Length: 105
Image (tube, rainbow, N blue to C red; front, side):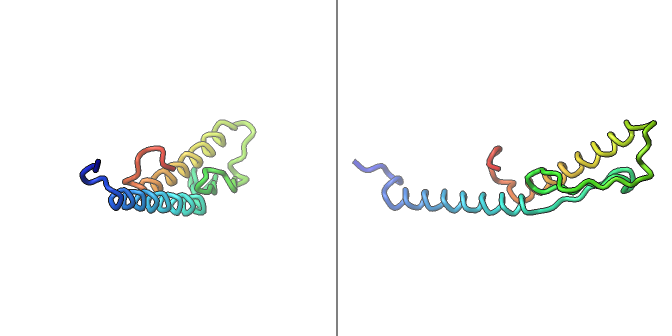
């Protein structure tokens, strides 16, 4: 009993396409993870370096922003820089995988 359109050749073609898509997803994931993202806040008073795995690899804080009387400002600057780096990663992800279903990365 044959299924129209789902014979051996068509099934092999579908499997090849699925494998090609999986390889492309893996390449894109590796490219994203190898990319370094830079963000800053407070006009460069706090700088964050983050890789595509969302791991912070460097934090640079200018000495003049360190005020024991106003630690909340420093916390806010760090949070803003981290959020900016994460936004950059999200934008890059949307750029390299716009056609991929959610959760593919």
